[in-house]
Length: 146
Image (cartoon, rainbow, N blue to C red; front, top):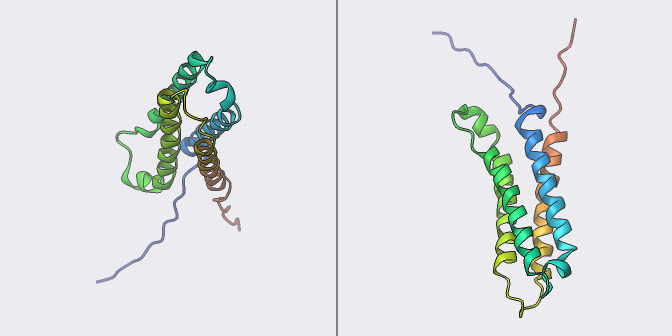
C-alpha cells in the first residue's frame, strides 16, 4: 500500500464573478453614500414622489445583484471559495433593503433618520473595502521557468 499526498492551491479568478461582485458593491456604496448626503431632499415633506422613485431605483439595483447570487449548478468547491464574497453581497443586499424600507415606511412627522443612514453607509463602504482587498490581494505566483 502506497499513499500519496497532493496539495492543490485554488483561487477565484479576478475577471469573473469577483470583479462583477466588486463593481456591484461599489455601485451600492456610491448610491447609499449619495442617498446619505441627500437625505434632506428625499425626506422633505414636499418630496413624497422622490422617496418612491429612490426606493424603486434601489429595488432595481437589488434585483441586479440578486440575480448574480443565483448560480445553479455551481461546483461545490467554487461555491465554498465564494462563500465570503456571497456573504458580503448579502450584507450589501441587507443594506439596500433596510434603506428601501426606511424610504418607503418613513413618516413625514418623524425626524430624518441620519444615524441609520450613517450606519448603512459605513457598512456598505466596509463591505466594498473588503471586496477591494479580496480583489487586489490574492495575486497568483508565476511558475519558475528553468
